[in-house]
Image 1 (cartoon, rainbow, N blue to C red):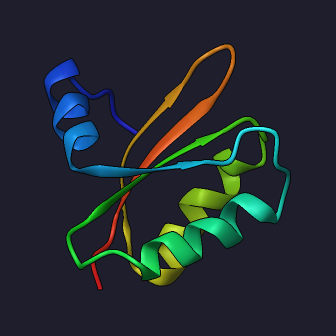
Image 2: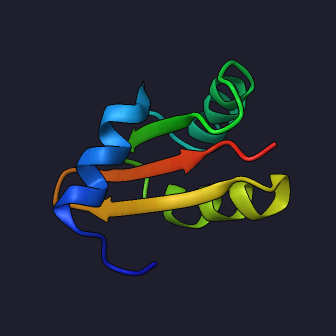
Length: 88
């Protein structure tokens, strides 16, 4: 995933709904993401905040498999943050 400017991240943030999966482990974050994506309009963005390291593998695979865009991701000491744009 390429680096994103603060402006790009701020734009994604303003468009997104929050899905806080901190403290949950595989497969719960991806299952919850599946439901959240289904509840938003095409073009909508879900911001997922997770603490499970497996989300770094699972969320990109979810996007590839279901045809959604992983618009950005950030890794900090305390969490993994993903911005997923619904494409279909």
